[in-house]
Length: 158
Image (cartoon, rainbow, N blue to C red; front, side, top):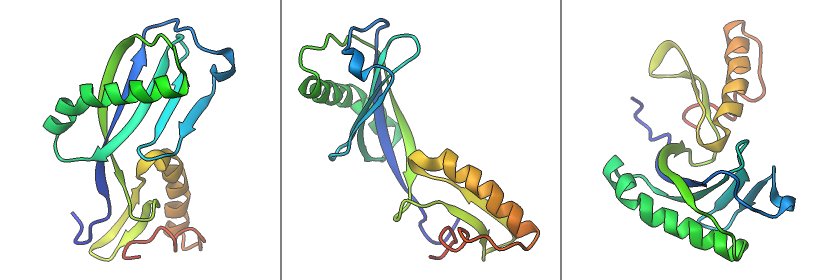
């Protein structure tokens, strides 16, 4: 839709254990995030499962994601065992997803010079929901000609 490339697409992977997994109580109800590359995150669910995700790669196709799902799940399990040796993680469900990320990690919010009378709120990555909330306020301010200090940072053609 836009001349400039505003986001790169990535595949991400996750798997969840069967219910009632036995884990150290110190990690129950918290989010663990290992920021190495590729990153790994873990959290428990309300029904007593452990969710493990990460292993992002550049998106090439839905077929690629499906073919790599099992391999990525094994990689996630290996990292889990390194962090929590001896955990008895029995995989119940695995999946792959798609997300976009911008070169600077910020959203694109506001008017685009190629689309007269249009405003965009394009939140990407893990902060998409947060950016969407900010976008609502920025666009509301723009509609009534009220300055918004974030609009400069989120503009197109930056």
